[in-house]
Amino acid sequence: MSQEDPKTKPAKAQARSRKEAADLDVGARLRAVRDRAGLSQRELAKKAGVTHSTISLIEQEAHAPSLASLHRILSAIPISIADFFALPTSQQNVLFNDADDLAVVTRGEADLRVLAAERRDKSLQMFIERYQPGAGTGDEPIAHEGETAAVVLRGTIEVRVGDTIRVLRRGGGYHIIGKQPYMLRNIGKIVAVVACACTPPMI
Image: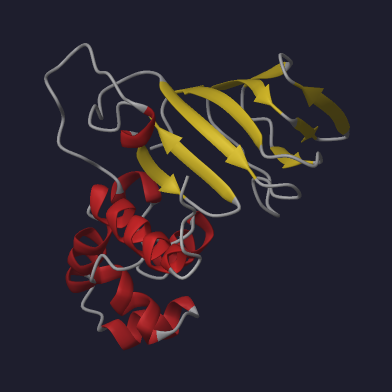
């Protein structure tokens, strides 16, 4: 059985990044909202605190930004992530997704994919989230107007809601009702996989 040449891995990773960026037309969307705001690439990069090449690569669909980077860039325009990812409404009431065609929300240490991204009028949204050891939802708590429920499919996560801290393993989960700020982090040694649903949708 032949082994993959290590030299081909960076090229494949770049190709995957370009495909994921193109899947949601991130580059085209960013270029459109930047033009509408009357900003050049350099002006947007300066306002967002990123490099000019970062903006250029995203708009060329050559780089899929992390959620944190995208949020920083969009905040400088400004436009919400929900509005940015607004997609044409599908008329289908039954939608199927294979594992490799879920819409990419963010990739990297925290990899988030979403089902049924094309239906903007849905009442429920489902995410599949993968966190590398030590990774999580970020330094700022998430506060969602509505309800959020999740089940741990693999690994060990720590959930903080206010002063409450709970460690959850495979099969465990949480359900948050109302705008209760929370944070999630993978405290295990393997990639943690979480299935998360929220209503109303975040994206």
